[in-house]
Every structure is written in structure tokens, then in C-alpha cells.
Length: 110
Image 1 (cartoon, one colour):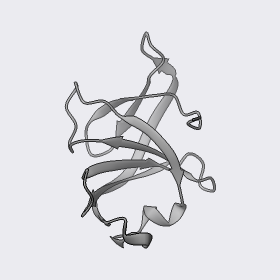
Image 2 (cartoon, helix red, strand yellow; image 1 turned 90 degrees about the horizontal axis):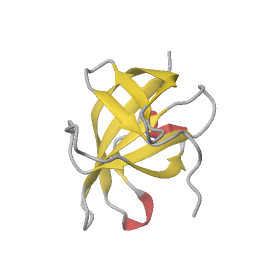
Image 3 (cartoon, one colour; image 1 turned 90 degrees about the vertical axis):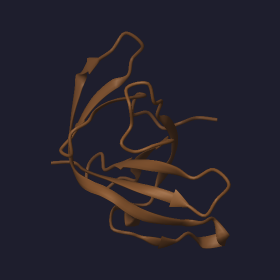
């Protein structure tokens, strides 16, 4: 089963939560930013750059003076690729309870 982790990113001007999804056990983590955890139905997840797999098990300072992260929750998730809403969001079920609407799992381009 695919794993996930939620980290609280602190000691920065804009504290937030990062939801990181392990897509296949070897690739970088698909990462989404959200303002609060647990999220409400109106909260928007923003796709950000993929993160290193080390973050599945990491708590502590981020290099370069970019704050620190603390673990909020980790577990397994279920993604039904065929379950999309009208704008293409994918529905994700976390074992801790919430069903989330996330932008598609494509790498963010800027």
C-alpha cells in the first residue's frame, strides 16, 4: 500500500503543512501544501515540487535556515485514478480519515 506523511513546516514566515505521497516506493514524494491540518472541505491543496524520500521518516531542521518540520501523521492512502471530479482533481483516502481532493499527480511545471 502507498504511504504518506504530513509534516508541519515551522519557523518560516508562512508556516504550513506538507502532505507527501509515495507514488511507487522508489520515486520522489508527490508533495502538496495546505494551510491547516486537518483540512476542511474548502481548503485548497497546492502542488509543489517533489520532495526526497527521506521526508517519510524525517523530523528536524531544514538545511539553509529554511525552518524545521515536525511529524503530524503518517500512514497509507488509497487513490482511485478513475475517481476524478469535474475539474480533474483526484480523490485520495487517507487511513487517518479525511478524503482529499488533490490536483492531478503530474509534476508541477513552472
